[in-house]
Image (cartoon, rainbow, N blue to C red; front, top):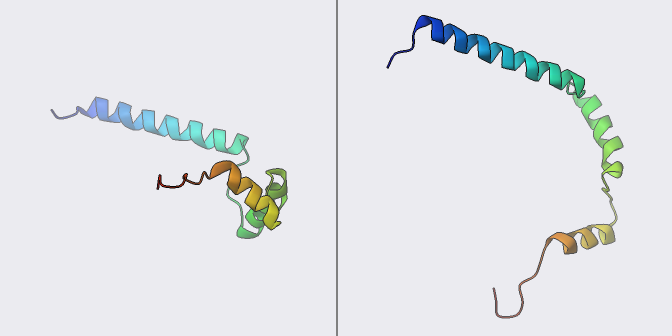
Length: 75
């Protein structure tokens, strides 16, 4: 079944409207295009707030929370 010119135009308008809404939401969330330097700076600021650490003991503790070792003979 072929689409009519009217329904195709309506679909195109709906897509454009959706794209505009997404673009507006991105700007509200601060998702504007950033330079690599700005992305790096923001990542460095956000990592500690998210619980990231360079300490190996912290890594091991986090790994134990998410990784379960199979019991003997169940591998």
